[in-house]
Image (cartoon, rainbow, N blue to C red; front, side, top):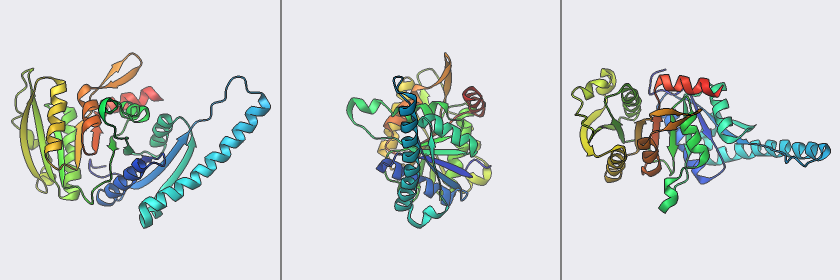
Length: 294
């Protein structure tokens, strides 16, 4: 699979307008970047309280199974009302699972190579918090995750890709260049020169494959930040100053006890960017995370 083509896109749905935005965004990408298969999914979990009798437990489980079937029908209606005729090729799945676990399991089962999910926009102090499901998927997903919080535009015209001199940034830039080529969009490559002493990357534009570089306009910018917080601020500031339709970001992770945590720059960018953010992990981290969750 080339970096900018998607074969299977998984879209978690909770029947909110934000979910509808995610579906429309996935449909846009599928149409322009590889005619991907879209899978819309809904997951919910039945957990019995310990004092239930065996008979009552059986009744509740039967009721839950029936409600899950109804949810599957509602999901079909939701997809149809959101995408219209474009819903014909969308597969729908309602499953019994904790939402984050269900997303991971179905992504593995269907070999999804992109997850598009909505994140509810908030203001004030609450804006520092992502939904628990979204944040867990960002930490654990073995495939790139595109977070969406508003209705997509008709096309993608401006793509921003912040980079450092790392292989992870090179991988993210490959995705950014490919998506830009799909839409004939302008790609802005942003190198944040931090106080730690990093220098501009002399061969930055050569990171983009020649066949895709010829179909994109690349602007190389350098912004200065005083820390990882400063890097995030520089990214969000630029994304706010100019009409970007997408930010593509290498999502650095590190192990913390038995799990994985995201870097500050990634979290702050996803929380505050005014446009969708595609987070791309390194291939080594993706494999390790996938193995951890098996």
